[in-house]
Length: 372
Ligand code: 0YR
Ligand code: MG
Image (cartoon, protein in one colour):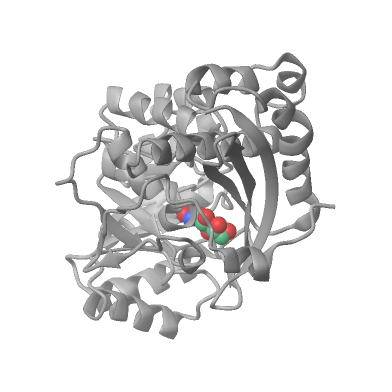
């Protein structure tokens, strides 16, 4: 399986809703920024990271793939997974400038493409290639009903519809108004609308400070919140540990963490309960597995970030024993060969060989952006 070519790409896929906001991001397009890796026999793997479709920074990622990683990969055997990951992740000159940010997002895309290749070569969907069981089930929780940019009446209607008409038993609502009592009011109305049996998590996307989070948690005490995600600044281990000690609402985080060591620090400090790795920000599937196993060793649940948007998380979640639920944000699935499906609140197990990361030709025709 010798690698003949590494060909980066940038797709900017428009959101059906036009635009959305959480407490810290305004999004109109999802950036699928990654690479095709072609072997000498013509087998092709696809991997990508996820961005907010900012072309200039997306190009830094594709430059890193094209100029730094591709020369290290061409001629190598794609089956040689761990060694190739180490070659890229520990390449001294790149380690000097990287380990987080652009080089890591680029590494994620490359690593996913290599796993996609290996699973395709084995003619198995990735979850099965990893040893997953055909009887596993996976709950989807709906984040798309809960954006901060959705006015309260539509938020309540959307949550009710997702539960009553689409079969979701789990939802997540964004929080992060300057005055947290506005969020408490929105959540109270949603809880009243969906009833006591629906799991409701909240996501702050790192905006509030510790006193604001503590005030929010005290006022949210009788809303039965399943978790409070990214309450504080992403890297603040001590702050999350202090919050976790002061509230009974479990802390969830990880979508902005770049390494196994970052997760290790949060776990060691008792600063996280729901561990949320993202394959597109860690160094791909290889490092994701290490994080999921770290969580397993501490008996902490793993609930990956952005299930449907990476495609890969669906496979990893069906496989890994610590995962029983996965985020659902149905933004980009129609652009892939095997669109991810949810039925009655549960993910449908993918069947096609590979990691599910192969975009349709039409996605390249309509949404590719120039690399320079
Ligand atoms: C929009 N999921 C998240 C979206 C989402 C973000 O920026 O990317 O809200 O990734 O926090 O849990
Ligand atoms: Mg989040």
